[in-house]
Image 1 (cartoon, helix red, strand yellow):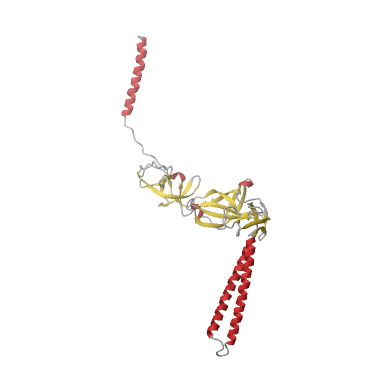
Image 2 (cartoon, rainbow, N blue to C red):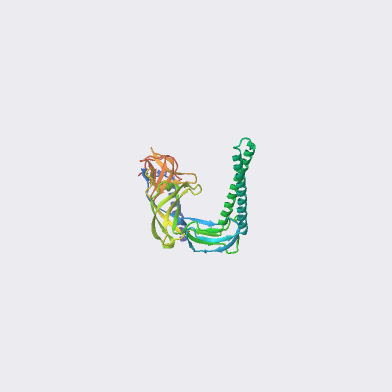
Amino acid sequence: MKRIINFIIPVIVFAGCAQAGKQDDQKPKKETAPVYQLATVEKGGVSSIIKLPAQLAAFEEVSVFPKVNGYVKNVLVDIGSHVQQGQLLMTLEAPELNQAVVQAKERYAKSKSAFSIDKEHYMRLLQASYTPGAISPLDISTARENMEADSAQSNAEKANWDMQETMMGYLHVTAPFIGVITARNVHPGALVSANAKDVPMLELKQVNLLRLQFDVPEALSTQLKDRDTISYTVAALNGKKMTGTIVRAADNVNEQYRNERFEVDVDNKSGLLAPGMYAEVTLYSKGDQQAFNVPKSAVVTSTERKYVLVVKNNSITKVDVTTGNQSSAAEEVYGALQPGDSVIVNASDEIQAGPVASNSHS
């Protein structure tokens, strides 16, 4: 009999609990309206510090290709050679060019002689024509035309000779500016062709002055202008902080990456820096004073749009915006907003537009 009592008691207790649970379920539940924290839209920009990747590039650089076909005779420089403007870098040899110069010179001499003879003939006929009936007008006209034709031919041969002399000058390769040789791809005896444009004979870069190049997002690029001062660090110098002045902008937005190229001139007379080094630019932006600013969490970004949730007259409206500068707490927005509008702070795409209870608070 004791065992039966022990068994029945827990059953009764369980049944009692179940009955109490049913009674709780039957009580009507009071639905509570969601409470949203609101913030006021303000006019003015958001100041921010932006770090952008950058790189150092040679102020001027050139790949040296041959202008004429020939053989490399001498290479007077090597990788790392510092050269001056106009300095001879290498010489080529092309025997056929020498022959072309000689032939052009001889043709010019021949045409010049023919012009002299025709000119003398014309002058004598012209002098004799002063005697009435001595020379036919047709003979004078013919002599003048022959003289002018020989003059044109002589000028053409002179131009051809000058061109051949110029081609000979291309056998001497000189430096177009002060710099350092960064690549050498030929050696004496190599055959080079004016049609080969894949591998240059030499590469020359100006390194005493460098370009610091960095790309700025288009939303920020409009806030930068010439002569603005920026700071940057170079990884190779253990993060040493340096400053520079913006001297040129591309005035063009890259359609693929939506950014604009800016450049700063960097004095490198000390030789500590080199083209290709990585740098990091720090920009201090005051923000766009014509923009609106809202809490960063108030901006909802979905796959289709970017918007804020505006609460007005106890109703929620989705207002499309574009964004600008942002800090850890606030973000610039552009859209159909007015100063003083109320937006939901912790917004999300789960919040639907429409009527809202009046228990939201700021």
